[in-house]
Length: 476
Image 1 (spheres, rainbow, N blue to C red):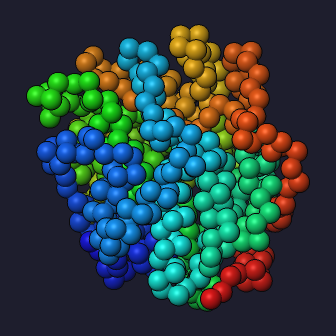
Image 2: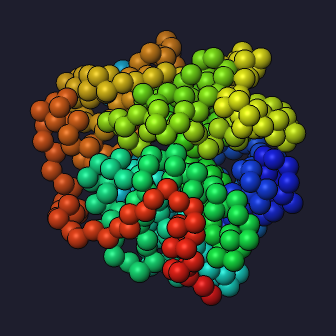
């Protein structure tokens, strides 16, 4: 299995190499040269596997240059009982007769990003040790990516993390999780601006090939295909668990739909790849918040990212994104995996601020099963309240965006799964507003908000960021 760039300018490379690169060398995004396919019989044969075993089975189709025994060991370490609260790793919980919650927030930072980051922490250290290289990771976070990456990579040999976050745009819990870490290899940088400004700085430095090579830069944002491939696993796991009660003779025709709270289009992109591989997913429903550029795209066929000034600060802050990096991978598939057509679309975006793909609009749902919807603060409050009243279960605001939109896309006879985004404890204010319930800190994180915090505030300035990284980059 080799990997290429959406923009056609990168020589095919193996999985271990693209783990270290993140962004492709030509500025595009890395994608599989050919997506592996799985049959219904293969999926059925995985039913009795544990989550780490299933992860190794699926990732072995992507990481073909890593020995299977090593991959098995990595997965056992990534998805261990010491790191994940639930014995299942990913439990499924019915909210009502129509919607089931896929529990992705059982890891160390209480957010779904742990699912991919714990694998990346193991795989990056593995690859670096065998290539005698160092890796300086530069990332941007709107909330949960940063803490998940830092907890997975803290203290790792040969790795430093430079994590950019927007000043004043995250919850107190999210800031405390990141900024309280005092590991020497973790560097938090609060940028003046919004998430998209942080992301643009990451792309600027990743696209500066001389600086990237000199300081051995890599990424753990969802532009890193390692994260996308690791996230595929829980789509397969969720389908297997949802179909456990279905008669064996009926499983081959059993379909579920999945609603995904989305900001950067990485989580739902993994679902798109799982469906393309052969997993029986009927619909993939994208749930946006007030920054609903993606909902507008999937309804109109026109992609028009908004400026930082037009990006709202909302009560589901991890989705406060107006320029979705991973959409490029989907558009690459939409345009027949044609790098020239993709490049033309991006030129149109640079010149006009938009991409007009209205000619392709009928294919979004008919071919890819993609639908979308928007949720507001009032919707989140109403949804948290109604879910709690109906089931006794508290959900976080991002998951509430997913449940609200999922309810608008239910189909008779088709189970709807909603991917949980984070634990409600990370967002106590909106939970209290909705339910009157005051959530305390989880026992293992008691005292987190009182810990001293270590962060560097910085202007939205690529030159200043380059100098900061150059002075602190780890080297072999």
